Image 1 (cartoon, rainbow, N blue to C red):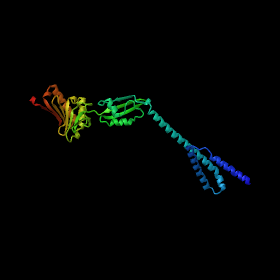
Image 2 (cartoon, rainbow, N blue to C red):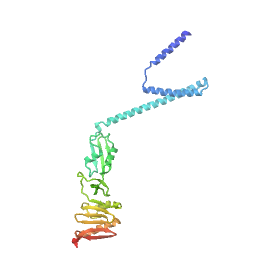
Image 3 (cartoon, one colour):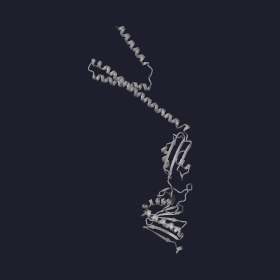
Length: 312
C-alpha cells in the first residue's frame, strides 16, 4: 500500500510538471478559454445550488455538461465573428489607404458649367480642388459647401465620376445694379441685395441703384422691372439705363442718360402702369416726339408727359 501510494503521488507530480510545460497560448485563445471557464463555472454553480446530494448531482451532470457545450459553442461563434469583423475592418482601412494614395485615382478632368462671371481658375480656387488630387480623397460635400459660401454662387452641385473626373455645375448670382455702401461700390442682384464689390477682374457696367429710406415694400418691383424690360412690356433696353431710384413717393424711377429722360412707375397697379407707360412711349417714338420729353409718369390709372423747355 505504501509503495502504491508513493507511485501514485509520483505519477501525479509528473503529470503536473508536464502540464506546466505546455506551450503558451495566444492572447485570443487565452481570452476564449477564460470565457469558457467562466461560463462553465456558472453552470457548475447552478448545478451545485440545485442539488441536495450526490444522487441529484449525478442526475444533473449530463444536463450541465450539455449546457456547457452549448455555451462553449456560442462563445466560439462569437469569437469567430468578432475576429472576422475586426479583420474586415482592418482590410477595409488598408484598401482605403491604398486607393486614396494611388495614382490610378488622380484627378485628370474637371468639367465646369454655369459659370458666367467666374473664370475656371476662380471656380477651382473656391472649390479647393485641382488636377492631380486623389479623386477618392476629395469630399464632394466640402466642395459644394465652399462654393456656396462664395458671394457669386447661388447653387452648386458636384458629381464624382471614377476613376479621374469631377463634374461641377453652378448657378451664379447675376448682378443687375451697382449699389454704393460705405464708400464702396458693390454689385447687387435684381432685388437690390449686395453680391460682391466691383473689381477690375470682374468689371461690368450696370445701372446705379439708389434706395431711399422706407422703401422695403417697393424692392420686389425691381425684379419685375427687369422682367418687363426683357419681355418687351416696357420698350426700354437695360443697357440704356443709367440709374434706378426707389422712393416711397414716386415708386420706381428709371433714368435714361442718352435721352435725358426719366420714367416713373407707381407700384400700385404695377401691371396696368407698365402697360400704359409702354403704349405712351411707343406712341411718342412713332411720332418722333421723345426728344421733347423730359419725364413720363404712370400712376393712378393715368400717364403724364412732362416736356422739356426746348419743346416749349
